[in-house]
Image 1 (cartoon, rainbow, N blue to C red):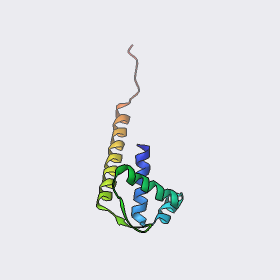
Image 2: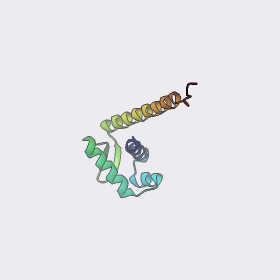
Image 3: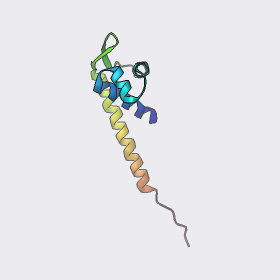
Image 4: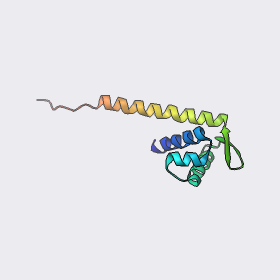
Length: 96
């Protein structure tokens, strides 16, 4: 889930800025690293997340919107599972 969370943060920063340099600044990393990570994720998923003009991001694609929504839902459910785990884990007492 950690990797999925990182993918979400990366995609959200790129979506918000539509500028890889600004996304990299927001994430305190390099522009080539952001670009490479997006291209690798698109390759793994087999969809183009961003429409590009040359190397510039133009807009998020419809499949890209679905990818972001799906990751967001997964992250929310992981949060719910952690909440359930915390509610269920109570100190055990030993029987007298």
